[in-house]
Amino acid sequence: MNFNPLSFDAAAFLWLYGLLLVASLGLSWFGANRLRPMGQTQSVDDPDSLALLAGDTDRLTETAIARLLANGVFTASGPGFDRSAAAGIAPSGSIDCAMAMQPMPARWADLRRVAGVEATRLRRSLESRGLLMDDEAVRQLRLVQFLPFAALLALGTARLVRGTMLGNPVGYLGSLLAITLVIGLARLVVDRRTQAGIAAVRLARRNARRLRLAPTQPEMPLAVAMFGTVVLAGSALDPLYRLRSGGDGGSIDASSSDSGCGGGGCGGCGG
Amino acid sequence: MRTTDDPVPPAPDHPVWLALRHYTIGPDDAAPGFEARLARENGWSRRHAARVFDEYRRFAFLAATAEHAVTPSDAVDQVWHLHLTYSRDYWDRFCPVLGRPLHHGPTAGGRAEEQRFFAQYAETLRRYEAAFGPPPADLWPPAAQRLRDDPRARRFHPRDGVLVPWWAIRLLLLAACFALFGSIFA
Image (cartoon, rainbow over the protein chains, first blue to last red):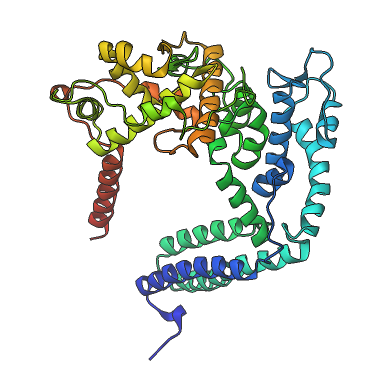
């Protein structure tokens, strides 16, 4: 009996390859979970740390801009941001100060570059607290995540070459190889958080579920840190949401402008 | 917009809440009753309508004890709209329980109004959480849905057509793809 998969007929090999692809997904996911360091379990309530844990440098940039807008230091200006004309409003915190010192109007790329410097410092701090992995652990995890797909690609390529030499149709196998390559490359991206880091974000989100629905203005930076700028849609900080979601910044549609009603002590509804 | 400096009274022992928590609308012998009508007009189950009516009681408590305007979710707003049509009950029984007239004010439209209602909705949810705990997410959706998506709902009469849910259309399309794929390689 011949167990050499390279000598299987095309249909049998495709079935085997499909099964191995599923197995590789499981192995990659399971291996990464096993290898991910535990870290040190703790709660995190600092918005900047949460932002870095939940969405890396982009999220940190969004959080800092949301804070500057909410505090009245920045105003939205076309495709970027400008210093508020109101006197006496000063930024607080190193990242906010660094952003506010940029030439105005500042664009997203400028502010992200500033946040990147702060992110490096903050990342080291989170590593020492056991919430992010160090570079060596990241390298190992990347290898574990990618290795199953590399092995599968090697097997598939060998069969592809053999099939081509024998004049067999190899279109489906080629497609599966392309899919494997895409998944494998995607698995090269490593979530740097330790298990404690993942748990800290999950706990923070669970404790602040209301902020995902609609944060009040002082709560907006923390809400952005945990859930992204989508929580700002329709708010006074809507320009930041539209900037990040690729909105054109033009007029809102009729459905949005017609919404809402309220009532109460002096209240109303929205509809 | 006032925010965290607006104190929230504890709900359980507040006299307004004690009067509201078992409040019912309309004559008891009316057919259909208020909740049944609410369920029918919105395509809800009776159980769901009862849950939304519960949220309306809570919203009314927040409205009665707030110093600023409050904004309900779309579902709660439907209860409010229907209640307003029971005008005797609303103005002669309900508002005296609240201790003040509770007027309903639709938006004037535009971005500034949207931002105002966002702020009101956020503050309403903050006060809800302080008084009753976390709001149920299925009845109090995110503000973007509340202000931009929910108002797109329209009245629909069954004589004018058939409503097919999107999930059913997606399922049919998927089944059609499988059938097509199978027929090609059969």
